[in-house]
Length: 337
Image (cartoon, rainbow, N blue to C red; front, side):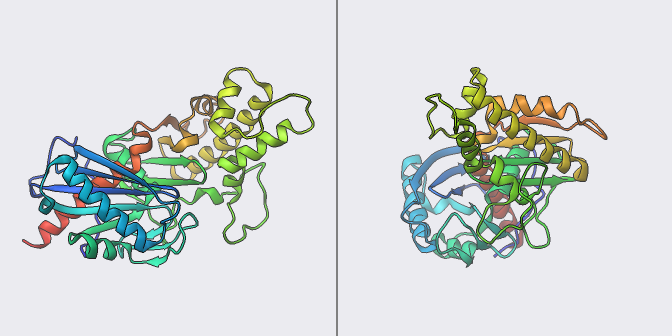
């Protein structure tokens, strides 16, 4: 298995590298409840997409079977020969060793521990394969085609059920000693719990402004009041109500924005990143973006980082996987010369 490359090119997808043979690649985004697969040509143009649920079929073996089904469907849908597949890359929601193709563990998928997922993909699809953490792949996608295109120093912050970051420094994706770089959900920031995190539990930052944390903030804001506020709102619904003038929702939005601003500022001081890109279901919230920007303006020393939302949205991971598959294909082609 060829070693993954992480010096992604920033050229638009219409400019195919002369080292990459004509054919197709597959990008895979494996989520806690859903999996999406895309077929692209070597220009990076997506030809077809396919999605399925992983709620009841999340073991590595069953996910591989689903991928095989999806890949065959995509080639039929796009009317291109199955034999033109050059490489495949997948993003997994957990700590992942991209060089070895191992998914160490993920709290979102059952039965995943030290899974040699790249090797399983190669055995199933008979092409070179690569695997990486899903948020790191989202950063790769944003660097290639999204809001951070051409920016060598930026942080992609994914805010959803969990919180994590994909970090670029000097044009390179940062993995860390134990491949856990970017696990910022464990950050201890003002106003969060200082208790040590127990195994399998969310970190301090995530416990406050992850999906469940914001839901708990909302319940606390509504408790003891005589209003008839719905109790089962998700984060984006709460923030939308805040933008409409709901004072209970606004208290949740303001607190969440302040904690997020602290986290962004602290990371920017350490990395001197010029740009932060917010993604994920919660991160794409416009009210949250505006409220966080307002607070960040107070913290402009030594430099005020630019804060924007993802241009690729939910496709960031998928486009990152396609970019990685293209790099894997080229690396394999070069090794055979």
